[in-house]
Length: 301
Image (tube, rainbow, N blue to C red):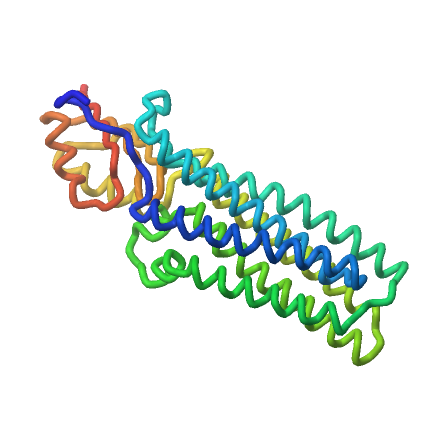
């Protein structure tokens, strides 16, 4: 790279660590997915099959996340990507959310069919598998916990735009998996004790609703980044306050996220006494998360 140029590497600060942990969780979930789906089919538990299918979407989503991490890292210096590869995680989150929504519909359909035509369940075999699935989900959540914990401790104005949505999707997903696993265990225990076979299918429907709700939330969050929606109003106000001083006024301002913890700014300033672009860039130097700043200056007519 020439001395007068700059790179466009806008990956998250903990990109490598998140990639490693995501790969570990993928392996855990794939193993548990096979056990739950096979066990559910053998022991005729719709809740267990639903949890296994949800685990499969979890494994698929995490595989997409791991692939996005790897691709973003390997292509970080590829100049074909105008603002780098920081958004690959957001694209991965959006894709996994669409897949989850489709699986939620499938689980709901199968659960309704099981309500209409219930089948006997081998409870003694199904319950231990569902409990093991819950344990795997909790372990997965523990492995992915750090980024989530940081989000709750960080109350600064850069809270939202600094999030790694790829890891956040994985973390929220394993929490949703844990909730579905709990529903599966509860449904199986109640059905065994009270001989209510319908409760198992009802838990499958509730599990489908949990998946659908999570998918919708992720679509909104990732879609906002992919469509270059402004990260938050407070950051926009901070940029304006830093740039507008004396006769300097912001005539045009574009602010969008280009990666976890990285935002781009393009601003046009009009002034009776215009300064150089670097003068205005220095005003923004103390604002965190502004990684690519472009300033255009015009004299006020």
